[in-house]
Picture 1 (cartoon, helix red, strand yellow):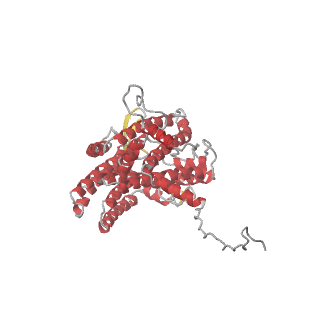
Picture 2 (cartoon, rainbow, N blue to C red):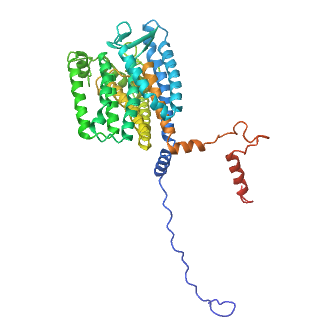
Picture 3 (cartoon, rainbow, N blue to C red):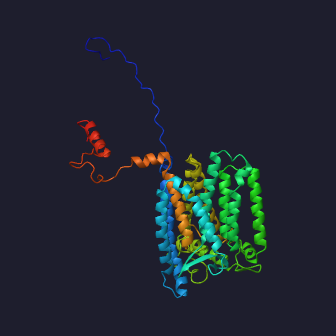
Length: 455
């Protein structure tokens, strides 16, 4: 037995075992991706970027599809192939100016514009019924000729007028605490909406009337209308709609074409609805290629307006149509987020009204193309051809952008943004007398704070 240097036997040491330290649980890649996406989703400027980016992407993709879907129609009318595209591009440029102006306007100015826009819309919609001024397109008397090939549809501006006027009206009643009384909830909002609906229905435009009705119900829902009152107004609107549909053979034929698979279904001509389904079915997963649609060669009526989604499905496939749906879903979510996070009653009602307008119109248009709803003759917002629909819609998008920028957290985030490259002109130069930019001083502080051995 070995001994130590002192001659004593070695003393056995107790085994020293370190206590087991639990290892931190590592999240899976899916959980990490989800947490990062949730943090990005909760940032103050998320709604701002979703509205701006989503609307720009929808508009640009719509211009591409209008050019592709309208070439054959233009050539059949002995016009240049880019005729409808150029008109849509001009409308998009004017709409971009309106979007920029609306996004920079203060909320007070938006409220001040509510009554002038309403008065102008009512005047133009009444002017449509004057012989010699109003003109009929596809059986609907709801257009005014501006000379040459330019026309305007005043009912499209009626949607914007109802949103602004209704939001301002309900906000003022809420400030005075009058919304607890049902008569203040309904008057004069419902009579004013019925005035617009009556002027629209004089021209026979049932589709636009449905959109205005959806906006009205959206405003009443946001205002906290009691369920009994809400259901009562809904029953009245449903009864009026039933009478209007029952007394029109054209509307009854459109109702009979829901889910049709043959061009002639029970005596109703379902040519447009069926060929829209054919276009979607032939697109497959990734489509036949941009410009390679077959149905737009005279088989599918209104290929660049009401049924542009069908051409999109044929040329871009399921991937293209799902992308369009995702953009509209992101736009709708951002609008709901803006309406839910604000403390300004007018902003809440206006943002909710615009979101209801765009979402309902997209659902009705896409539902008709898919054969799930009757063909209402409404365009796909920001996507279909039509300057009269594009201009007020882009102004409404500008409203949402302005409201998203006006959130307190968004204002603070925008104020803290610094230029990523370089400095602003005249900042920190010799003799300027200004302090260097904050991000430069932070970089110098970080360099000083490093230890000597750190690289």
